[in-house]
Length: 496
Ligand SMILES: [Zn+2]
Image 1 (cartoon, protein in one colour):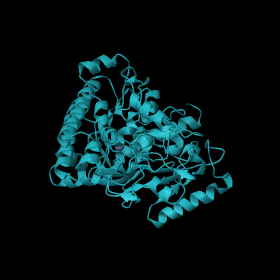
Image 2 (tube, rainbow, N blue to C red; image 1 turned 30 degrees about the vertical axis):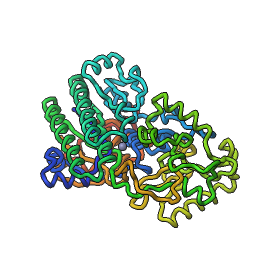
Image 3 (cartoon, rainbow, N blue to C red; image 1 turned 180 degrees about the vertical axis):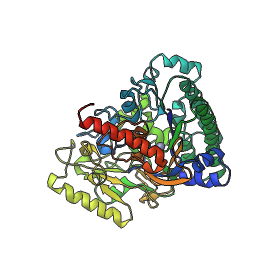
Image 4 (spheres, rainbow, N blue to C red; image 1 turned 60 degrees about the vertical axis):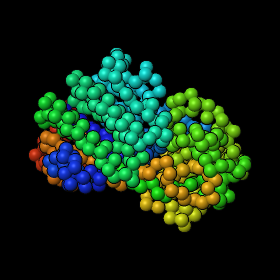
């Protein structure tokens, strides 16, 4: 039996549904009418990292320890790349691999470097070196032969690129991933995972250009047809699951969290900064030229020597730490309390910590900004590493930025017309034993347990999601339940 999980970064179920109904996305239309589908609710905040980690482990960031692309180091004002820490939680392919299933993983954004699995792995776009890109290592030569373009160059020029050039590049990357996917499908496999990032890039840039957006959805629709055709030649009982890490929406209201903190006298800056001077890594390096070239995707450029240069410059940050109560880094909607004994120059006493968080959340609510204490939304052993307060992305706050110097707390998103949203992500399941024309609701944590269930592999006790039993036809469900009950009975009588 083959199960393929196709990740569509940022795919919106509402757009897919509308265009599928209008006959513009025939493959999606078929998958939905012959399968089960619905909204997939993402994590708070709905960012690519941590969202893919949640999806492929079935666990919340408090358990994975992964809260954003780069994270503030515990007890320091420095950043770290998210995976340089903690013991990695097992992803669905790790569990399946350990149960002897043959797997492949291609372009998963949450895989920074490839590692041994029972099958093949090609790391995602954040992989810092070609040497770390593939498992087995020899697969690298095949990628060269297939002229694999993993898109790392595109990230650097993302904001500067012309619409037409960017649109073309995004499609080329999808094409390139398909070439490699078709090669991996030739090998022996039972579970495969591939991620296409085309829709995420297109929606960030072209959210207000519906024609152009549709072109990208149609491109994905065509590719899905090619994948399905190939898959059904191999196994006509294969199951395909399509999932996104988050949905999308307009980016009309960007909340300037540091501007707000500074106005509330919670954040003190050393000097008057220009409008862009406090933008995450480049906060001490605010040149327009660099911003337009690297922009928001600076968050990815820790892969480049430039990042290191900027990080060094950032040490001369304009923050007066000894007078700062709370601060936020970058564009992730996270607030840290400058806690005494935890941060190098912390000033908030431990017994004031709770009152400070409550006051920040209350003050934010006065301007309709929803925020949460970390323990309200995360649970698990790494909660202490999470930001102290996390801002929610919704209709009022379309995205969050660390920039200051605008003299107001909200601005219109100028470089990105679209931004991630939490509630219109996509889930579609199709294939053997899957119910037809069946509308459901899923959480990002449900995908991994559901896949393990399909394989009859025990679902780890500590996952935060559930098996989406409602997508299976009753006969299959009973068959699976028999297998699971059988395993349980054997365990209970000490046979396994
Ligand atoms: Zn994403």
